[in-house]
Length: 302
Length: 129
Image (cartoon, rainbow over all chains, first blue to last red; front, top):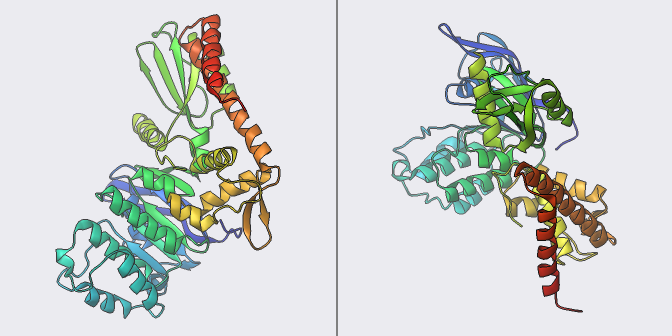
């Protein structure tokens, strides 16, 4: 990652409400240059709302969003020139042929790189004469990525780009991003449910649940320090003292599981000394398990 | 080398481990050039920042070394360092086995006997040099 600490995308105290529902609460988040940031969250957590606000296509109620130092609402066209976007549903001009769509879109961008565009057409095996409406879902997403990156944007924003794609198409998509966007200078914000892709691409992970950012840290750190302490209770009915840093806990018969965010041997000792347990151990968790723990923990409390 | 994108082990540690094994197995020898960050990133389909992190970790462990302007090479003492670190990882996994054995309520003598037999079986198959 680039050494400079300059924020390329910065949310500060962003809030959005739909009627009585708080879709995004006090969201603050900064993405430095060269960073690939994955935003995870269950359906309806506010991911798409967050991304729409970053793209300037949805107004927020409070806070500021800066991309490359500029407030997105002050200068939307300046920002759009420098950002590439691929959404979940591709509303590309379905009646046009691929070559026509490319010609049309290229006219908006002074920085459009025709050589790169040709290379992407070849690499993605897009037939320029084909009509958009005759493309498969996978090919449509590839065309979407081509249109988002051929002007060589400094920032790429993706909303669920690979959901519903087969593994080979997903790999092509990931490859397209690695080849063209991961050069240490460009930054990426992507919302995704496809956790394999997140683990391949992300430097940093945010977990958004019910409009609140519960996690915002490097992916390696998240995987290494989130663990589940499992204790067998001497008596499942006796009161339990939960260790600090607990995200979620559950009891199944005599097994008590507590997932903690910054695991230390001290927490195991704390559980052992403050509760009557017969045995105790700690298990590692993968990204999917960590994600589910945060969602469940948040929803139990709420 | 392959990456398991669903593992609980961070991808950069999987790369560190994979390269270390490759060096111990003789895929790369002392003085050999390693794939560039970009090459390995595209081959494994992972973020180049992650590959870079793995290379930095192996460099600070003295397994590989940077040469000005021409990339990463297996260090002169790289095989020895890689062997030592792989051995450490094997011993750590034995610690884990001990914990599991206790959780399974096994008798230490039984586990040790089985392990001694397993070692004997594997090592006696080794062709004599």
